[in-house]
Amino acid sequence: MSAVFSALTVAILYIASVWPTGQLGLVAVSSLLAAAAVIETGPASGLYVFIVSSAIGMLILPNRAAPLLYIMFFGYYPVVKSLIERAGKVFFQWLLKILVFNASLTVIWFLLRGLIFGSFGDTPGAALIYIAGNIIFVIFDYGYTKLIWFYIERVSKYMRK
Image (cartoon, rainbow, N blue to C red; front, top):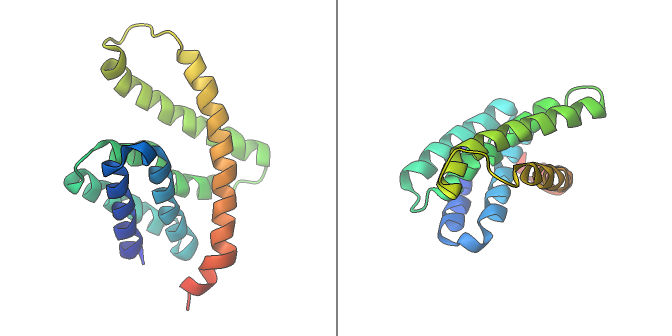
């Protein structure tokens, strides 16, 4: 099952790499397959989907932006989300999720700001990027949770047959 989810993930990442208009959305959708792997066979399977899809995506896709987005956040987030949501208190879960997102955003920021702004000096608007990013992340996580529940309620029962 992990191999099928990995192949589908790479197919969606391919579409994202050749259709840059919907790239961010398609990369987010591709991460739902890792979430499906976590639901069907556990976090290890989701991690396998992430690793295999990332490696194949970086090797064969014509544009590396989509697999890089997948590697830097969207690919491993379903596994991290499933582990975090096993913690007891909702406040603690949100705190951990926001910390993971901000750590990912910081890595992305330091890797890409030199390419975008041409220097590693102080960049105006960094605080605004973090504030907007956190607001968008909370909305993303809420919608992602709804899509996962849709999968569990409507699709998962057919996957186990």
